[in-house]
Image (cartoon, rainbow, N blue to C red; front, side):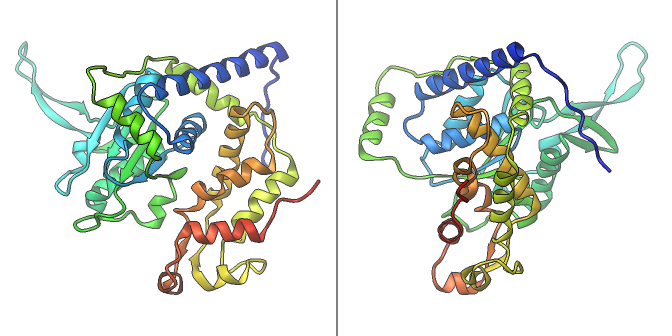
Length: 341
């Protein structure tokens, strides 16, 4: 039997925390907009990942500002930022750090000293994560799950908050090592960056081809981010809305009796229980960001595709019919509408 420990918070204190949350959210958008043009959905999803405490996988074509977006977010949040360019020869110790032997000049004794790797940061950009072998990928993914890493039997805690933004290129697959589904499941979102509109591209050209250098200013601190993560978890969700979230995850599984026929035909494996957890958490953050104090059906459905697109595995029937995960998830949303209270 489990019990939930709830802390009573004064209404005025809670109100001031919510006001500060919305103020910081607005300031983050303002600062990022000084550097990044367009990509509203992507920015919202990255911010939700931040406020939830989850990690994001960003998939986009070359030149879509994946790296620039992550660097700008780090500047805006005032957090420690590190970048790792993943390559086929990258070793786990290049990420986590390693022990070296140092000699004490006073007494001549030699001791082991741990030199921290780039993983010891608040925001880590894992650039082109699918270009490094599984052994090195696992070193990062273990840290994502445990918020710690192990080197020579010693366990080292990572700084909080710890937020990984991994990027991958969807078209250049030669010489890459795609992430297995079990490892993909640890990411909160698979965020897709698409091409900008013509007007937005013109803004980018105007912004980047002059002597003006756009930079973002920090608007918050690590302590505030941790407080916001706790605040998001306090957002209430009704039983019917939570049940709808669980139901939407369950019907993505072909073994589920209530799953539609097209899921049973095209899907090999559906979403895990973790998908339902992340779906509710991201919906809570979205509700608070949109000025509401409870989760609605619209929040669940808005987060459905980015939370599940990397969690369902399609079979050869879907491949032969040229169907992607997004196509199946859109059909599930059409198949199961939100309940009417």
